[in-house]
Amino acid sequence: MGEAPRPVALLTGGATRIAQAVALALAEDGFDIAITFRTSKDAAAATVTQLQARGVQAVALPLEQRSVQSISALFAAFDSHFRRLDLLLNSASLFYSTPLLEVTEAQYDELLEANLKGPFFMAQGAAARMLRNDPPGGLILNLGDVKAERVGPRFAPYLLSKAGLHALTKLLAVELAPSVRVNTLALGPILLPEHYGAALRERAIDTTLLKRVGDVSDVVGAVRFLWTGGGFITGASLPIDGGRLAGSHHYPPGAPPEGSGP
Image (cartoon, rainbow, N blue to C red; front, side, top):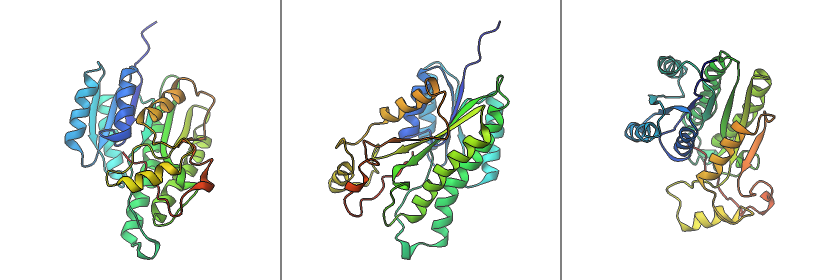
């Protein structure tokens, strides 16, 4: 019998932040890696160099995930490099404040298209390839936000997009069973936005039961678990939030979400 093929992972937004950390960890585990970028071309090239240094095949592919045409082009390019797909991490997203009475149609469309439409069609393309594996199978992971279940003010379109992403996880799990598992990683304060000062950082910490900010290693550990030991888990939302969701009645008034983008 021949050697088993190396698994392949595709990570949107894998040039930076959480998705980059997951990509590097999966490379350590023996995955070949494809990452996507929109504006972070230089960071993507640097990440590919780091991935290749781990002895795996790695490519960076451009993607505007608000465009189905761009998603189709991405998968065509992906197919020129890889013959299978085993894991998709939908990480790339947009995040910014939108006070309700000031929300514009352009802002609404941008957030819903980037954070929900994009992951939908990425999952569609990924699933088609996972079902062609021999044997069929794979894992789709969506990066969500625990505040999608305990909403707050000033982020309505963003939180709506993340609530939709949590619902999409369940729908995909039903549609793709039993071959492809689909789960959400519902993030709390892991990597805070770069613009957060000391006061906002402390408010975010106060919303957790563990009274600290999480680390990218917490997300990496969850991804590894769901790949290697979570074979009976699908359609689930796994909070990685320091107990924020469980202790949501302790939120400081108006505490903002942190965003789960790359």
